[in-house]
Length: 411
Image (cartoon, rainbow, N blue to C red; front, side, top):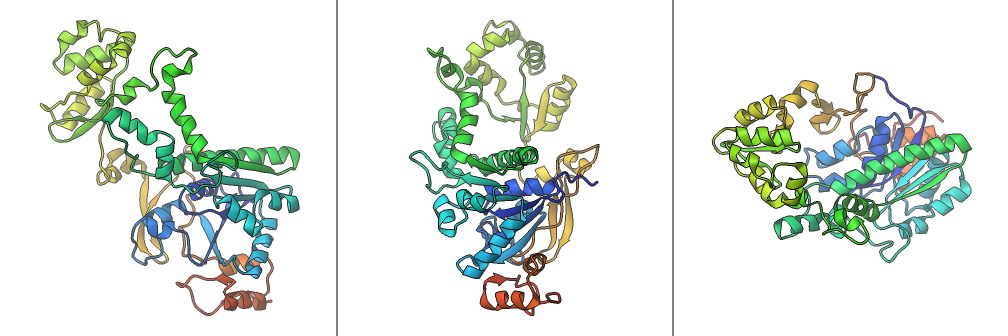
């Protein structure tokens, strides 16, 4: 279906790796024209996300950069900076996760850009903001997980800190940034003025942790220790069955009674520690030990059938290998395949947002570095001779997968 509320909006993507590409990918899902600027060395995620047939796109890069056009510029060269300034003048939003000092050296910081273009929405994604003692320090997702106590939550539960084994901070902050950009575009429509947005990863993820786990420390004086004790219980994990693991949660008194009856522990229904929500909150460790005890006498599928008949929230505990073949995901067509211009047959993941009962088009596949360089330069009204000169001087580059001979239009 066609759902493009941002159709006509141009987004200049000066981002790399994950957090920035997530934000611009989401805006592309809403129909914005995303122009990704890459240096000749390329986005680090092209290699960090794993190997690929051509060596040009990791699987992660393909999924995070879908729906974007790509221009390759060497910003160390003055003419490339002129091209970029031309792009800035033609776009509505600039998104970057470059470090603030690097942006200042290039004259691409918000103050400089908005001095010349006060109508632009400028979004800076940072690790630690632009003030405070951590400002300007480098970071990656795992470092933010440590700094925000996400890894420390595992320590409270398991005795040793550990990272969530996915780039959870990058994904969350990128999506928040996309929402902030949408709000800024609405503000611009009202006032005609641009907006400078700054989205720091550290503060954003620290807020998430504290909203859940400040808990009893939210009061003055505190009424108990920090941390949601249910979530921090070492028994709060998938439960082993005869042939695997199952994930389930039970909260209401009637659900607890049905669960204890079904799992052969009816005598605990009269235990005052477990008789009510309030009692289980006080005796959370004991309750989670009961709830998390293995269920070895039946298979996962057998338990799922039983729990679903009881209207309990229960699902299989998937692995990376089994998730893509989940029957629900298969039935709704979350994943598919397409022919990529350089990678052959590749997996695709459709939009998960439904609009009027249908999923919007996810857009064209991510492409090699410089795939759209010539087209974008033509749109900026550079002549054939100028484009050929840029390519010859290394100011701009085209994809190595394309012809080495420029195929630009007429002057």
